[in-house]
Image 1 (cartoon, rainbow, N blue to C red):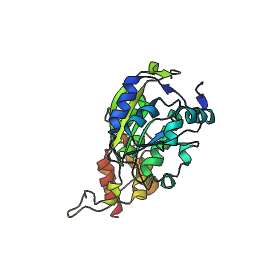
Image 2 (image 1 turned 180 degrees about the vertical axis):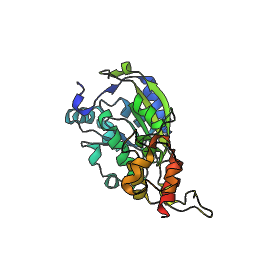
Image 3 (image 1 turned 90 degrees about the vertical axis):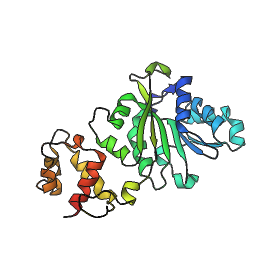
Image 4 (image 1 turned 135 degrees about the vertical axis):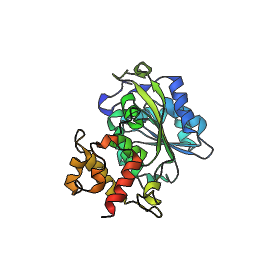
Length: 268
């Protein structure tokens, strides 16, 4: 069965990488695993060996039928729930996914959409173990010290860590870029639901999630511009706390910097 480029299909064939993905998931008894884009079922098979229940979502009709045949016994036993649909249209609440983990070799062309959907959902997964493009993994971790809206978006909800780089030759067909396994652990909304450090004396206060993202997105609107220039559209360009940042750009601010900045601006 050939991979479909339009669906971002690249089938993982490395036993080492498959094992590392499952190990990073730290699957415990009773864990429910959501797999995105199971493809030919190589990872699905490994997950079923460790988990009592796997929910696998496959958009491709041909692969869905292939998986129905391959895992007929596991489906009959209720260990595998196979869904033929677009992952971005999945209603996790209707699938009884109150507590679950995502472990998947995802279609790279919807990486950002998958991260946004599940990190911001009402019932977030407790962790996500994903195979992504190596360059995307590096951007999320921000090893060069330069943050991006992607890295801040992930770090606002979880703790990302790169597990290992995976060469393109371990996929069929081989993509043009190398990949990496990334783990995002301890996913929650705690920076929005718990008091955060304040630049003022006294106890910290909660920050508004929508306001936080409005400031972050505006700050990153023009990458090469200074932060003060980008935030002028929100009438914050001349704010004292913005001026204190001098020539800094959005990429120079850590997650905590954005939290404190949001709290400071909210005071006015």
